[in-house]
Length: 467
Image (cartoon, rainbow, N blue to C red):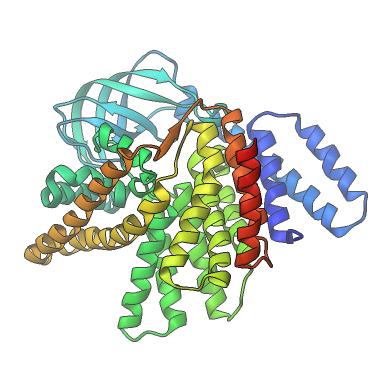
């Protein structure tokens, strides 16, 4: 099947962006390639060459912007400065985001906050600490401010800061020991989760439930749509309001790449519904990825962004085949989505992390419904608490039960023999998984029936066993 123009355009833009971020070649070389394609006089090469050139220019602008950020300018030494706390923290301390103020640099940095100093979001604090350099993906300047001393605290919160502090304090009040898991589900903060529990979720293939992903934004968007429909709003208006709610939520979180892609998808789906347009799935996915790259060019080298896009592509590709051959029942659709997402992300996780959790294919049958109930339940309890504490407590009890069931599911999956594989985090580790994905795509070809797919899988199994 020939790729459509949106897919090729996004691929060309991403290629140009990647070469610039990774410092591969020179801008002059990228310009020469674009000019050579333009000289062909054919529309598609001209379009792709232009996209690659714009991507390379975007990368150069992104690197230029890094020179003004604190991550780049801070020396690896002891620093004394004033910071504005972006995320609230309690007396236990932890890893939070802070924004230096009154200096010659911009942007926020990650800080390791000491114990014994609880601070609300939006507070301005004088701190002493050591800047520890740790480059990010693609060699992007980064590091951590290890705070040693905390001076005078001046609370100067904005409305958004007050909301962050309220959500943090209320989650601890309602959920107690599970507040860290609630913060991960709603705010994307995983620092409060026990490290052992995080490892269990990773080994069971459910770690995506502990971060703000497209799944979370999709669940919230779906519940907002259902709520609007319950109020007897039209389908078009309900889609628009749901998309607006998801965009507002993602903006509050700071536009993380996976959530941004999901918000863009919700907006494009709402636009398509309102205008009564049927959009090809891969083209829609490519446009949402392009939106993410335009907002944050560094998402091109971000592992979470790649996993989010790959999971959605795999889930949509395989679920379309199960819909056509096995039926549209929830059981088959979940199977297709789970298998597709696992196969599509396996080469990436094998190369980057050295691990693949195949047990997640089975666990998703229980984990996805539980998370679909837990996320709105947690969010509703936090929002209702100021108006009706008793109702918030009841909602928290129900949501807490689903969170506990997710924990038990993760523990069971992690302890299952053969449920996850561990190897070296290198490109070679991705080869067998990439081969498995390619064979599976060959088996479920666009026009392949169930019988034909089984025949091809059988031949593939014979080859594997023979070798």
